[in-house]
Each structure stands twice: as C-alpha cells, then as structure tokens.
Length: 428
Image 1 (cartoon, helix red, strand yellow):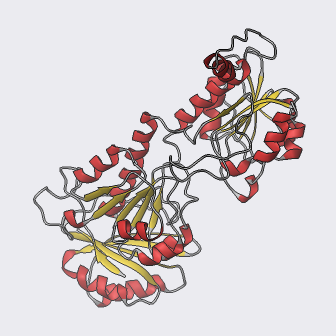
Image 2 (tube, rainbow, N blue to C red):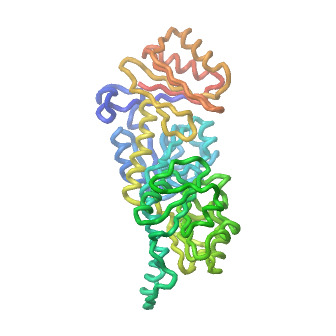
Image 3 (cartoon, rainbow, N blue to C red):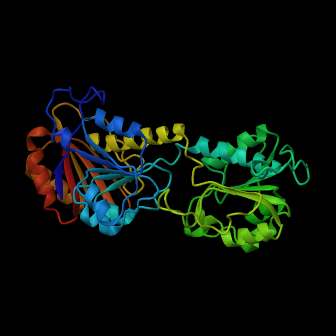
C-alpha cells in the first residue's frame, strides 16, 4: 500500500518548510477522527497543523465505527472503543491510532502493525492525578469519611471514633513501584505513613520506602494495600481469595490499576465477613460502555467501600496533558515519520527533513534480504542517499531514507514492488 503524506509547515513546526511552500499532500485532506470526548486541546493541535478534524463524544463500534473512522488517516480513542483486526482490515487509509489514555489493551496491536498502523498512547500523563486520588482514599477509608457523609445525608448523626485511625504511622503497601506507585510513596511519606513496596523488577526506593521480597510479605505487613500494576496475564486476579486472606484483619484495599487485577467476588466476601475494613475501587472487570448503562458489581451497597467510575486519572489537567502528549506524537509521526513512543512499531526519533530532500518511509516484514533489495533499487535508479535510519523488531522493520527529491517518486514506486513491503510513504 502506498500513500504520499505531508510535512506540515514551519510556522507550526519550527525548522521545516515555510508556510507557503508546497507539501507532498494537501494538509486539509488529512482526516483526523477523535472519539470519546477527547480533550479539545487535541482538536486545537491538529487544526493548527492544517488537518481536518471530526470529534465525537461517545465510543463507537461496528458499522458506526467504520462509518465514522473507516476513511481516517489518524484515529484518536480512549478506553471504551475497541479496535479489532476486522476494523484494521476496513480502515485502508489509516496511518496511526492515538490512545488518549494509559493502556492499549483495547487495540489489536499486532493487527495494526501488520497493516502498517502505528499506535501511540500516554503512559505517564495522568500519573499525578492517580497518585493524588489514591492518597485521598487512604485518608478517607481510614477515617470513614464517605460512609459518615452518606449517613449524614440520610439524617443520621453517628459520632464515634470506633475503628477509625490517623494514617500517620500506618503501613502502606504498594504493589507496583513504577511512575504512579513511586509518586504515591512520596506523597504518603509526607503524611507520616510508613511505605513498603513489592515489584517484580528491581526499583530504587524513594525517601524511606522499603522493598519487600514477596507479595505475600507485603500483604501480611500492610494496613493499607494499594495496587499499581498493568493488566497482563501475570496480574490477572493477582489479588484473589488466598491473597485477601493473607491481609491483616481490618486492613483496606485500593485498586486504581486495572479491573482484572482483583477478584471482586472474593473482595466482596472479605468485606462482608469483616476481614477487611474497607476498599476503594475505581476499575472493574466489566464496565458500562456509556453513562446511560447501569453499573453492576457485587461491591455495590457495601459499607466502607468507595466506588468511582474509572476516574482516578480523570482531571482536567491530566486530560489536557494526555491530549498534548498523544497529539504531539501523532503529528511528529505524520510530519517526519518519527515513531518514538509507539507501542507496536520499532521506535525511531528522526531529525527535521532538510531542504531539497525527500524522505522515504518503508515499513516491511523483517526477513533477511529486504535492505539489500532496497539499496539495489535505489542504486539502480541513480538516487543519492543523504541519510538512512533503521530499527526493527522480530516481526517488522522500519527504514527511513532521505534522498534527493528528483528520484523520490521512482524510488517509492519501486519499493512498492518489494514483496516484503507493508507500507511506503513519502514526505517533503
């Protein structure tokens, strides 16, 4: 498959071509479709580049998704839109997907790569928001604030200190000590909590936090357990009946990570039995697809339980940061072919394309001999290579070649004939 796409003008991207210079494809014909009420900052950034933008408030699926985004060059989604192999078969013009969220589980990454579609996300932009809400829940659970507030709204005055604690001196156990877990650690220590953590990778502790050797050791020592791990096969039901039974009697559990990490039926049993004092849960194995659908969970109605609708990272600041990060990655990819931050492509961060050169972007199956064919083709056509960059993974290779402009069309057409080619495009 071959398409020629532009480098946007220098007024919006310093160091590139002047605003009135011709580009290899009309900017206004680049169609961007944004779903799920992506922050308006993304619309602003794409329109600054001269792209055409369509924004939709809801997630879409099936025919509705194809109708809206089947002819898009760039597609932006959040966590509710699922992009299947069938979608990538239908979206013939699609060059990249931006997940305006942390995870990419909703995207068939392998199918996207097989069609030459790069996928980007924002793994760190809402870190602070999640850390703050976690610390707030630590305090709220230990003081029974949510339950006491509900009682007051119901006209009940229940003034008692029984079962409630200051957090100072309590032990907070963090399962996962990455970007979010480590920020929670710093904030929690400032409140006087003692922090321990468990991570499958060696991590440098911040402040006075201490690593423990096993998940079981963490569960047995902690007054509060907070989860900060990704969704993988290894974390599926990481906290089940056996793990809950190992937790201290009267402890609390916080899950602002992924819904599949906790067995919610087992958690409900541990709460009803009184083994656990409380819980805060923001993510669930099954979540409503829209605000109009009813939320169902065995945790509903249980005292001492804070339930929130997947909003731990949803602040205006976080959503704007995510819009900035993902949009910038997509624009850089369209501008000069940079794949830095891609989750399914070999990562290449490229310099600005120099005046008088055209850039050939060749995405191909990673088998022996492709580069030899490519170099022979360029040599036979008499093109001069000014720069070349290659990155590959076991399945795919991504090579970027800057050549003199007079030969770029012939080179592109020749590369289309190489059997291993998945996609080619030209930038100038």
